[in-house]
Image 1 (cartoon, helix red, strand yellow):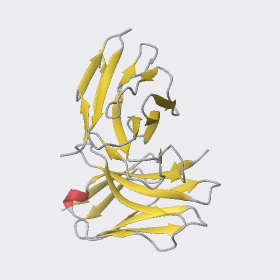
Image 2: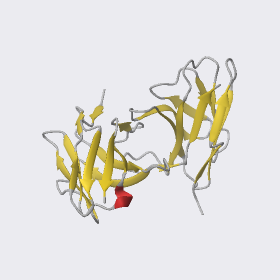
Image 3: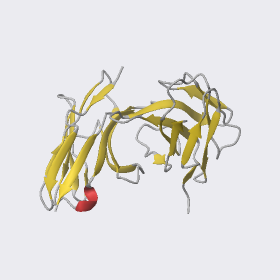
Length: 114
Length: 114
């Protein structure tokens, strides 16, 4: 079974600084997708970024980028120029190609200090 | 605006009572999902449906039931057989079954036991 592990329960970052959230996953599949979702205090789930496993290029969305290491099964999220609005729970998630289930990690709480 | 509407926002259940959580979407999405979120854990899949009148169990279906009589509606019933129902419940949808598709989430229902 696929598993997703987020080893950092909580992280803190100073406003305008950069922070990296870690995620590792376990799968025997070669084709799959990886996601980072953000859950702010409103509890609304928001897609931050998505990575296709067959693409070597790391995905980027404005201040958010990933470091995807397929061989190491690692998928970290880098947030640059952190803002107060980035404070949230961040979930890493995996979904295999033509699969029906999005598997989530336990989440990392990100606190942003002003 | 298109989106997913979950109701109620808060729900209280008495011992031995069945309760139903509503999920409605006007996105014309084929696939719908129910997730459960417990503190310190990621989201876990309860049930999913890829087409009207068809649905499948997820990882934690015991004590829950669903129906998909209409494309836009996917209600979840928490039965008395679910002994630990207190959790945050999220409904989601995708246009199709492709693994890379973004999940659109509702705003959730917090269920508590009286």
